[in-house]
Image (cartoon, rainbow, N blue to C red; front, side, top):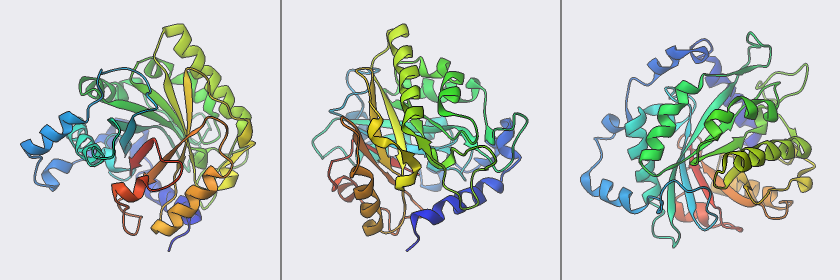
Length: 315
């Protein structure tokens, strides 16, 4: 079994393999092989099932009675998750197909993209924050495609030495859309003199999470938007300090997602540790890894924890 601690080193090694490619539009060249071709296409029967799990009515905000099921990754990069292993249209169909596996568990299912929007780097970059930022035009086609398919989108931040509030403000234009929520990945939030990866697991304080929630809440109120999710990834206790102080609002639902990989026993242990100090009102999520889990849990296994997850994602 690999421990959760080892996962940080492995992910940064994959990122270093494409060090220059993630700095601009050339990243799109990584996705030369689409998922649909690699898997023999998608049948009409599967598409009929996909339609059955779309959120109805479409385009509303976060609904706590629904189950959100996502592909996770960065557009155009097969290295950073399943989302980037194919183009937009195939990613929509693949996400719907994955979500359809959860249709028999008694809750409306919302197919979802979780898009890594800022990518932590081992290099400082021009602004010295060890995080690669990208233009909104890179992500807008994915948000538009999700909207047409009545899907939700979660934008994930890996800030390096930047802060979650500062990067949230930078993507306000994307967040000011009704089907878009936000995720924070403290693994890649490091302090002055530190750099992401190399076995280091980052951390965020509850106060910074609350500042981010306040920014998101203000955006929802100013723009008259429906409620949003604020997902916080966690696989070790040290990733979120002063966790008990974190509070959502009527407009922003906080959700902690277990983000560790390994055996089912190890993942369940990480989940139990995560929920042991869950803030009041917070919901939970579970993450599966196609390559690193041993084996990847089934939908029934993914939901068989307490509290039952509201969000499941696949990397």
